[in-house]
Image (cartoon, rainbow, N blue to C red; front, side):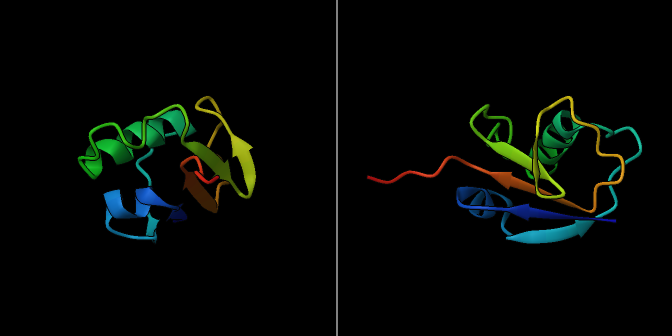
Length: 82
């Protein structure tokens, strides 16, 4: 089981701030998870945007990053301000 956290507007897209999931065995990288979740939530590409960062166990990961031993995964959209 993996805790998945959605920050900012992604919590609105997914309808939740966080959840605990059993990730399918064929979803083994951060990019595959991004695609799987986008389909699962019918998010119309919101989780696929290149500006959305992924942190795996509190370390920034990339689409190729393995989810092996992941206990927490966070999706973070860019932060606006000014």
